[in-house]
Image 1 (cartoon, one colour):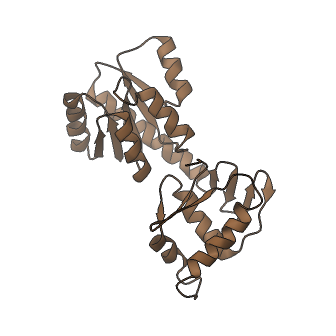
Image 2: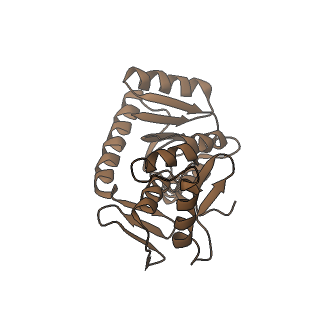
Image 3: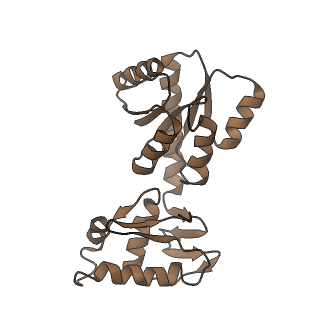
Length: 228
């Protein structure tokens, strides 16, 4: 599994990383919550191991932003020296999935990571066909697209683009990726992608107050409900 370890104590992070890599996991590291958020925007992970007390962005805040801003459901295992019920309630309310109190056994940590990874696979098998960003829903089984409860009329090419954008809503999707997704479906020229994005915007954004499809000039597009 791909594991992100967000821990500001270098020795603890190194011990965790060495053990998990020896168990066959791939591990990335972030020394604070701010860097952790940047990694989460650009990469995909199966489980996050997250310390509570960190500089810049603490673990509780990172978990809230992970759920509320990035809309990611990655399982989070929180490492903490705090073991009161109130501390755990705060974490669970922020979106934490499991707790491990310091000091801890590396073997137990790995077993809990395995359990969280299996749980996510089970959840994904039931939810892979349902995509959601903000109030926009796309059922891949029925091809039904709705926003704010209203059914949207979009053509197959637009659906293809929408699927790619929704599956990668946590990052910018480059033009080349979208053009590749259209290969075999469209025979247009250099402006084909721009034309289809324009049509998709007309269906997804124009009838509503807040646009979701954002242009990142010179790079590509991102589907997001933020206002930046």
